[in-house]
Structures are given as C-alpha cells and as structure tokens.
Length: 285
Ligand code: SAM
Picture 1: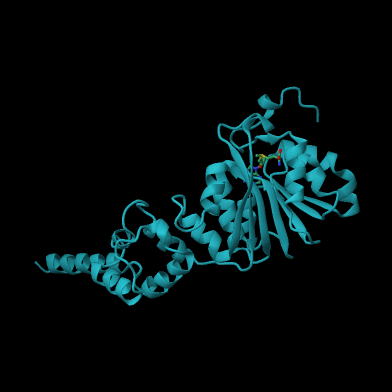
Picture 2 (picture 1 turned 90 degrees about the horizontal axis):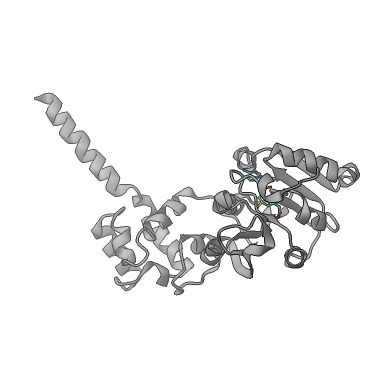
C-alpha cells in the first residue's frame, strides 16, 4: 500500500498516530523483557514496530482498521508463512470479552490508541497470561500509573499498578516523532507484573477513595460508607483521620478494602431499605 499523505490517511476515530522514528522504535525494543515469551501487539498500524518485533519474537497482533489489516497481511506475508507472525483483525477489547488475549504467557508491547489506552492496560492487569506491559501512552497517563505514594500524581491507577507489580516510566517521546503528531506529549511505560488482579469491587473502592484527590481520604470514603464504619476502621488501623488519598501506600488500600469491602454499597443499601419501607407504608394508606 502506498500512502501519499499519511496525515490524511490516519483515522482519528482509531487513534492513529504512527510512530515514524527509528531511534524511539529501537528504544522500545531495548526496553522489552529479555526472554522468549510471545509478544502481543495491539494496533500494529503500518507495521513499523512490528517489523522490529518479528526480528526476534513470535508476534500476534490485533488491528481494528480493515485497511491496515489488508496492508499488514501483504507486508508480513513471509513471517506469517513461517509462523512467526499472526494477525487478528477486529477490536481487541472484544477479544478480551471472551477471556485471555492469548492462550499462552505473553508480553504486551504497543504504541496504544490513546482513546482506549487506560482500558487496555486495566484489561491486561486482569489477564493472568499477560506477564508485562510495555506501551506508549499519553505522558499524563504514564505518570499516573508510575507514581509512588506521597507524590501528588499518586492515583487509583498507581494503586492498581502497584497491586500487580512494578510500573516504570521509561522515557518521554516528543510529538514530532509521530505522523500525524498527537496533541500531547507521549511516554513509554513498563509494567512488570508478578500477579494478576481481577476484582472490580476493588476498582470501585479506589474510585471512591480518590473521588476528590485533595480532600481527606476519610471524607471520600464517607460517600460510600457510614461515618461510624469509616471512623472505626481508621481507629482499628491506627490511621491519621487527616490522611489525604495520595499519602496512603498501596498496601494500606488493600488493608482498608479488606476491612470495608463487606460494607461496600452499605450506605446505598440502607438508603434503599429506608425507601422500600416508606413505599410500603405509603401503599398501605
Ligand atoms: N503501532 C503503530 C505505530 O506505532 O505506528 C500504530 C499505532 S496507532 C497509535 C494505534 C493503532 O491501534 C492503530 O493502528 C489503530 O488502528 C489501532 N486500534 C485502534 N483501536 C483499536 C482496537 N479497538 N483494537 C485493535 N486495534 C486498534
């Protein structure tokens, strides 16, 4: 496929910003874990990163854009024939609906479409076959995943990353390295997983805990749990009631969650019970 004007060809809908810079392509490959596990690439696009990956790895790639699927099938005819490369056309998120992305352990490597980057990373956290995640994302997102407790960027995403392994912001990439250039600075993020976590309730709990990041953690929690329960839990764990969300370590969030999880929705349940009682009273009249 000959593309006269790449910027014109690129689909905004699919978050297409093609990485056209050898220096950064090499840097990504060098940051990969040093083993022989299979690689899953999400959004191979025109195949620039894929070309580097298939030199040393067995790659399965997921691409949603039919125009690119046609191009990749022709471009990678040889590695496909040799069994080093497999292309799966379609929405990668749908693949995850039916279980693991691949049926063997793998590393995820990608220049991600930014509109679903966080969602993809969270899916990879839950997929126990995924051993590491090396991805280009918006710098702001990389900072949130990689922040350490007490830094002001420490967020629910940092806690989730810390709950499956270790997150590192490897390096930044300037806008000019892409065609077309994105509106934001990018960064490559590495998350080395040592376990997986598939607990939606914990994610909901973190959303509550960080709902107002600059307010007190206890106040945030009181939007989902009764004041008595929050006060009691803070006393049990010997916590400062003035603690802010970014000041608590990942392990502390797990302790808090374990203490509180049976009461998650408790406040809503109480409200619901009161509402049902008053409805029952009214219907008797
Ligand atoms: N890897 C190429 C590169 O580095 O130049 C392209 C990266 S571009 C930022 C994102 C790629 O993800 C595009 O090829 C786009 O079509 C693809 N994509 C977007 N949404 C997708 C989805 N839901 N499932 C699979 N691929 C998707």
